[in-house]
Length: 326
Ligand SMILES: [Zn+2]
Image (cartoon, rainbow, N blue to C red; front, side):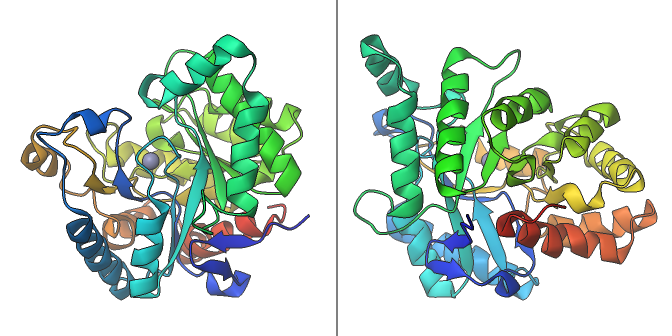
């Protein structure tokens, strides 16, 4: 079954995807932000303006498409994403799915689980959002997001993984993941593939959170994609390590299984970071054009070819969404 590439403004033809950032966020809101009525964040009009300006910057910087893998319980607003996409004529793919237990909207599911297992109820939502749309918006998700925190995959997170696998198998939709500290991605891959999701339909996100080459190659050999998707977030892991470990993956033959991005967040619900000014000081490169402007030249110096960089930005996202085997 071919799911195709479903953007917030309709199907994208494979050949039109172009240079694609595979993990950036227009808007994030941690569950519970509504309680902070003192610090609600920007107005909707201001958020849209900010996002439109940033997309225009991306277009001028040679980017054609973007995946915003915000799960349903992390302040996702598909109508805002669609409005920005319409105003800019830019292709944005949104997600269905649920975030990691520690930082997701888990209270609802935990309460419901008092009355029985919730895999089917979650899968029903994911399938509806992939095939018909989110609520009554008619805006369809193009991918399923799952996540794990650090230490171990919790029972809750395993439930979400099982529901995602069910929805992926039922619809043919691909899956992208969140990992903490570049760990447990191999376990995510094992759980999803055991439930019937083809490995090449999975991106193991934030794999650049570790420089562990064996971990990277285990996922590559298993047939999935590595997300080197936090360039510019030096406070989590220095870019030097991302560049050197990505160059190693490429040298080991893994270039066809890497996608790149920054995990930037353009607008926040509430004010989860009390001092945003300090953030821009400790992460001055946390910008969605950082890869093309600053990282690509450093990868070239590390022995990665221009063709391989293009492959990571153009061919790999296209092949991933097309469902072709790398
Ligand atoms: Zn993210």
